[in-house]
Amino acid sequence: MEQQEFLPAQQRLARAGSFAAVAGQYERGRPSYPPQAVEWLLGTQALEVLDLGAGTGKLTEALLERGHSVTAVEPLAEMRAILQARLPRARVIAGAAEQLPLRDRAVDAVVVGAAFHWFDQGRALAEIARVLRGSGVLGLLGNTFDVSLPWVAALREILGPPAIQRPGHWPPRELLHELFAEVADGQFPHSQRVGLATLRDLACSRSNVAIMPEQKRAQLLERIDMLWEQSAELRGCERATLPWIARARRCRGLRASGTPGWQATVVQAAQVRALRGAVLRAGQPADAAVFAGDDEPDTLHLAVFDGGDIVGVASVLREAFPPRPSASAWRIRGMASTPQTRGRGIGTALLARCERHAREHAGALLWCTARARARSLYERGGMTVVGEPFDIPPIGEHYLMFKELA
Image 1 (cartoon, rainbow, N blue to C red):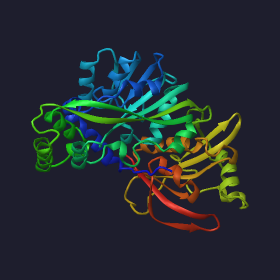
Image 2: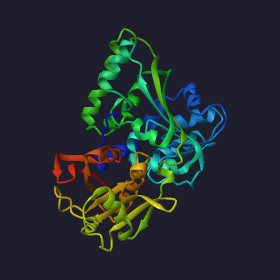
Image 3: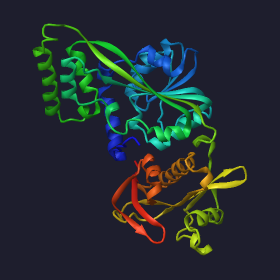
Image 4: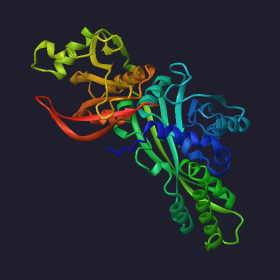
């Protein structure tokens, strides 16, 4: 499985918000995307496309040029202002990936350029699946340096790798295969004409540089100036060609059994206990499936139905998180699905609905004790392990896991 790397929620939101102050540099410094990549993702037929996390419209412009009808969703007003001024043909909306301002089945395709690492993955994928039509496409794009030229390798050394080369930039293929029939990767070389000012803007448009103390940022920009002045390939030039590789991931054929098809329905405590007992308390007395807190007024019990049968359950209740007892915490308990439906997105749907309930009740964090075999499900939803694994007889190895909620 692809390695995951999750920033704490507050840090992730602060870093994402830093682009507001550098929207101009972002527009001037960032490269676009090659038409070959857009065509590989979406084909040649004109589609209704959602550009999610659209920024200043780098990908929006490439989509419009290929004849697509584009709705651009971007949370930052500073980014949206540039996008609207540059690309009046696009429909530009304020919004976030975790709560899209679109109706169900609204678009043929959702594309994301260099932004997915800012999203809450589980909630964003559930929303993407909701707004996609059945045969829809999810297209992920990102640019990485082509370091075959020495000066580009030196530039990357100064700036560090682009986000696309860092762990957790895209959802893991295993998770995407739960939602889509086809997941394929491609890469497409292209280039950008740059001057020294462009490279300075490119540097400043990165979130890690945008949040640097002023003196440290000035030192980094001085290194770029020196590279331009001293590199044999750049010295004396006003402009140069910066080579890029656009990497793409195409997900096609939304599965009917994926997250959008599974609706987590609010039910009574008694309705979750049969499956809870059969899966989690097999061989134990019936009252072993009755958990403390089940009957509290703000506890939420959820079930996923397939026809008239319950195939997945979970509960979320207000309970202190042992390492941080003062925090406003919500605990997920009793998540289970039938053996026949495991690996088909039911857990993802339940987890997203539990998190939504915690957020609606001003929860500061969400936590659980996860069975070892379920650890990857919670990690895909943004939860991290605390401490060492521990045994709960007679069930087996567990992990204490949590997620901070903004």
